[in-house]
Length: 98
Image (tube, rainbow, N blue to C red; front, side):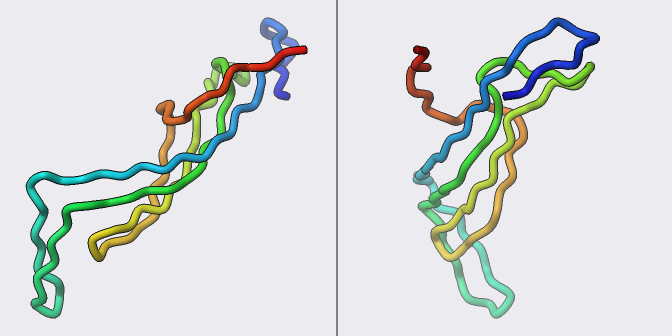
């Protein structure tokens, strides 16, 4: 839980973490030539990752905290790490409150 400072309205923010998997297909494949002169064609990419944020807009003083995610992208001979700041790419389950 994150509480806002006493100088602003008092609220408690619910943390929200999630994981995601994303697949992509390119109808027009991308063609590259590697440093060794070999052709490389890409028509599919996949990404798996996780993200963290808050269910509502959490702020500390005047700074709004965005959702932050890190993903590993791979497929077609390419791979890399992607950092996402902002956005909302998480399937949320209903908030169960007792």
